[in-house]
Length: 106
Image 1 (cartoon, rainbow, N blue to C red):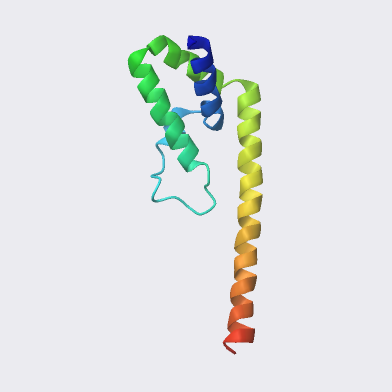
Image 2: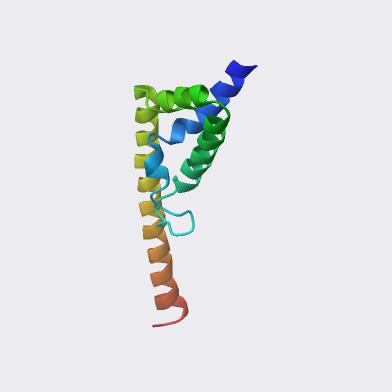
């Protein structure tokens, strides 16, 4: 039972590699491109809670979050969400220009 809980927490920590990185931005003061702030904040909260109860399990989670597979996966997700975010911003800009030129006649 403890192993399955630790595995679930390790999977949640998949999105965070280092804990100071999580606290670097407020959830409400984030850039639109920074979609991983919320999962990082959740992972940091879970880590802090687990670490208070059992520092040994907390250290296991830190070690699991820094394994190469987790780091590569997290970097891939960051790269792809950044691309999607840029494309969404470009689409919104095109829609806004279309709205101003065709509908409003500016």
